Every structure is written in structure tokens, then in C-alpha cells.
Amino acid sequence: KRRWAFKMPQNDSQMATLVTQHMADNGVHTVGFIGFTDAYGESWWREFSKLADVRKLRVVANERFARTDTSVTGQILKLMAAKPDAILIAGAGTPAALPQRPLVERGYKGKLYQTHGVANADFLRVCGKDCEGTYLPAGPILVAEQLPDSNLVKKPALAYKTAYEKAYGGQVSTFGGHMWDAGLLFTQAMPEALKKGQPGTPAFRKGLRDAMETTTNLAISHGVMNMNAKDHLGLDQRARVMVEIKDGKWKLQN
Image (cartoon, rainbow, N blue to C red; front, side, top):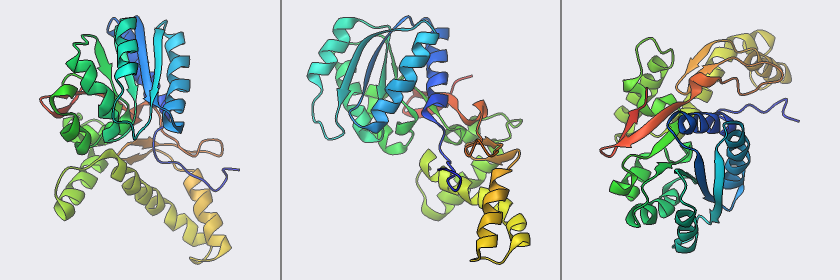
């Protein structure tokens, strides 16, 4: 069913693996979860709860909220009553700031985690000082300048960042990077596809698909791709880093 489909963004399971690892390595034993009521929240709950169990993290509260909600007071009170060592907010974009603010305002002292769905400047603007000290997994493009020179991702990530900011100004988001990476994938596959047929022909399309499927060690702004017939994502652990929000900016965690 997915023979002709290729995926650019990291899987939630890859990001959840990093989150649970960070929790376990930093003294977290009990966790509260609050996520969107939609597919995004459910996907994160499925992956996070499974990996939390593997790392012996006990989930003591599981709450939901809608993207359009204006208050989550009831859910926050339940989360705080459970007294978890950390809370994961599984949301995306600026709505993910909704649970964060009341948790901070009500004095929650545990660790706060968000997902890669908030990796953009708008989230920082809306959440403001209430997001200080929050951890999240993200594509390495988010902290491209902070990557060591030995990291294969640094060069393509900085290439996109520089090109975007020159053309549009402002700050790049991780989301635009996925489209840039799709362009890199096409560019690498194109020469092989042209050997099979002219653009617009079935032979060319099949050649392009086949070439993409055999992508090897392609450094992109979000990681390094190695695809095969059973893996049309091709990203490994190099496709995510742990980031902390510090002084209103993204800071790479070593």
C-alpha cells in the first residue's frame, strides 16, 4: 500500500524513545501525560506509554484536551494531584502552550516535556517565560549552529537555514526543513530516474521511485537517510536531538 509513498518527518516512536531515555537518565520515575484528543495525541500516547513501560517509568495520570480548548483547569488539577516527577504535553503548535502555562502558574516543580510538534518560533512567543526549562525532542535543524562540525547533518541544515532566512527573514522552523529535505531526496534520485525514461513517463516515475528507495547515506537537514524496500523513511537516531528552552531560545542538550 505504501510502495509509492515516502515519509520525511521522524516517526513519533523515534522521538518518544529519546524523551523516555532523557527522563530515565534524569531521575524521573513517575510521569503525567496530557495530549491532544486527536490522532497526534493518540499516536504519542501509544508510543510513549509503550516505551515508558520499557524504561520503568510509571504513568500516574493520563489527560486529554482539544486544540480549540481555552481552558484545561480540570485536567491540570488532576495532573498536579498525581504529583508526577515529570509531565509530557503531547501537542503541536501554539495550542500546546495551553497546559504549560497553568502548570507553571500553579507551581508545578517537576520536569516539563513537549514534543517536536512545538519546534517553531511561534510556540516560544506564545508560551513565553512559562516555557523556560522545558525539554523537547526535535530534528537537529532546530539547533543547526550548535551541532559539532563532525555531525553530517550540520552542513545541509545550515544550507537550508541560510537560504530561508535570506529569502524570507525570521527564524526557520523544523517543518519547512522537511520540504527542503524532499528536494534533496529528489535531486539525488533524479539522475538515475532519467536513465530510465523521460519526465512524465511511467518509466521515469518508476525509475524515480526505485532510486529513492535505494537512497544511501544522504545527509539532509533532519538526519541521514538510508532507505530500502521496507523502510521509506530511512532515518536513525541521528534524526533527533534533545533540546531545552533556555532564555527563550533553543539549546542543544549534550
